[in-house]
Image 1 (cartoon, helix red, strand yellow):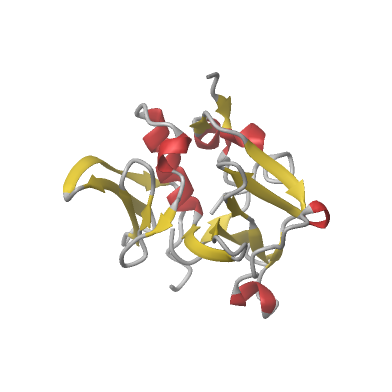
Image 2 (image 1 turned 90 degrees about the vertical axis):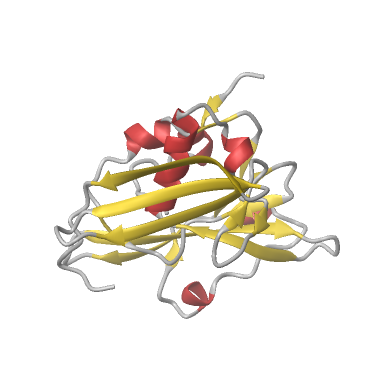
Length: 201
């Protein structure tokens, strides 16, 4: 089956934005995330559907969205795996700092039709998944399918753990590890060129 760029499936509303593991983080709005997003591939359909056309019920918005802290980037909901999973993108803007925060929760549909949140990615987390795809895995293998332990999530490939630490120089170091039956099957780390030292976390 032919693979298609993940960036194309997300739609034009998200191009150029730093797609959001864990809580939301602050990012420079001018950062060019297109190169690594373009490497995130998948071999299954991701449907972009306007929320007005979703007739089987929507997932509950996160508390940070209901409180008004975060807002929608669009009215689109992104479904995958025959609409058994979906995710949305929310943002909080910081005009004076020239930065934004993005929050991307993932949900799984339950047998009774309700939704349960299974993961929440930051830009660092999504970048880590993109780098995993660059190493030969597909998005179908690594997109969230179940909640994991201690904030991790389960994918078809195994449990995925993503951790990001801010270094003293303000650079963000992200580590990703995939384990299956207690064995590490893939791991990597990288530094993101975001100078975050002026922010407190």
